[in-house]
Length: 260
Image (cartoon, rainbow, N blue to C red):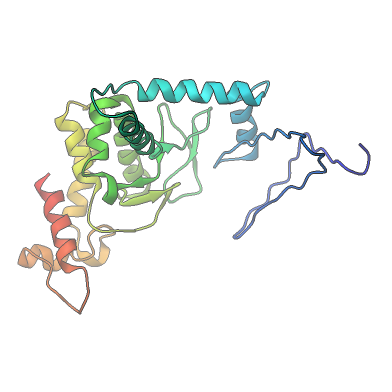
């Protein structure tokens, strides 16, 4: 209706910057339903459109919802449980669902993704993953993925090794192609080694070892992952420098990585 709606069918203006957002308001009547599609890409607007057309061509909300439900049912059905109450089963499968949300795919349907710590756009022949909260996940989540979803875990290991190739370091807490340096230690090492020990070996093992050796031996001032490496290599532990510092947790994380 003239004066109440504006439709941009091929909006093509790119906007970049910090603290940028958007909102929409609609002239609706009681009981009226609005269906909105959003394409997402970390590469380009054109890729976002391509993703949307590939994944939701001929958009119908109920159809998309059903497809999403079927996809999740297939993933969760890899695990069958016995016993327990109905509520306990809900808790279990909710937790499994949460565990599968991240890491998530980063590449577009055409394989393109932003390289680690770079403006370069590369193309992946497999799944490129992101959101590696490794200090939180190296103890159990990735072990579970190796056992139940090995094809996903293998692509995650390949993604971590590729991050080293692109940036010079394995990830600590990677978020959409950037290293946040959150949390402690060198947590990619136990993830990669555990995957190899569980038989997932179709990745660049030599480069993975090169990356591990670099973080284990580089001096602290030049070490993105182990800033306390000088004292650690000299003393075998990280001494307390000031009240409430993280010397013990740093040392423990280094021990775990080196033991792997």
